[in-house]
Image 1 (cartoon, rainbow, N blue to C red):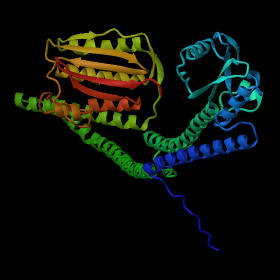
Image 2 (cartoon, one colour):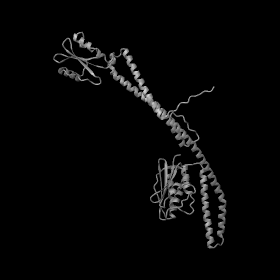
Image 3 (cartoon, helix red, strand yellow):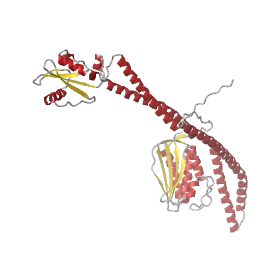
Image 4 (tube, rainbow, N blue to C red):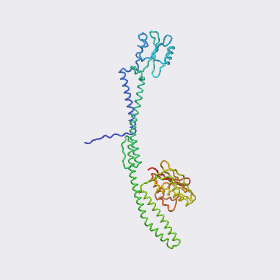
Length: 461
């Protein structure tokens, strides 16, 4: 037997907020209904009197006081009263304040209307009792309690209902707000988890679409499509990198033998009796063969580093910086360039010291190569927020816009401001590779005096 499952309908953001408002409105109506039921029950149980009780009995009360069948002390509790003798002195009262006594006395003396008090409109009757005293009776249209302890401990019934209504409405709003906020929070958590998964490159796990809001579900679907596309792109890129690595390794291996033959035969030719032109040609062959051998060494180094795991060791930055300073001084001295090394903090760093030193040597070698005689090269290293920042500045011609964008690409050489014979375009590529092994990056920029390359390395794995 086939079983059909009803799929829960998703809400849009607009409908979700309308649902929230309707839920709050229905809750408010229910609260009013419950308060009305409470009022009817208390009225039928005799716990309260109707609000017009005092008004309905005012005429009868006046007749009883005038005839003497009722004395002021026997006036019902939902009235307040005060008695004056013929001289205007107070003879008896219920519970008026001094201020209210003064107002009533002035009203009796001047025969003027008595002002009402907040929050209820108050009414007064001036009654001449059988004993000749003037009794001022005060009442209002409020709902009185019939039980003494309720009158003593509870606020006015109208105020009590208002407080209950306000508290109930507040709690209702809080309840529905938390309920709908929980739905939005769950959807936001799903979006955050999906974003974090993509940031962490966990691209092999499909994203979940279980959300309460249509817009969020559509966004998750788009993010999942982005995830799958990114996973495929990275896979293709990884395959291309692997293929390029294999091709570079094969190229370095294949070129090794013919270069060895060329170098050997060139050395043999150099030992023969040659004229000046022939000797210059042989020396040119030897120089370029040496450059090609250096080129192949760098290619083999790149391939070897890509296949090696990252092995960090803790070293003192001050000691390492002293080694870099020595390298910079040697490179600059050969070209009569002034070398400046900024002071560095005493800090322990967890890095691949040998590879980082090789990267710094490449940066210094590039800076010296493009700095004219009498120029200046600066080396600076600092640590901030677990990041080691190494900068090398020079006073050369600086980088072009294309060089700043592509300078770290393999085999890229600049043809305009940084021409140099024999430059193979692998120096900054090696630096960037070493930076990536430390979860860092390389930045190429210009200063007012020349070019600057900055390498940032993360000190924590």
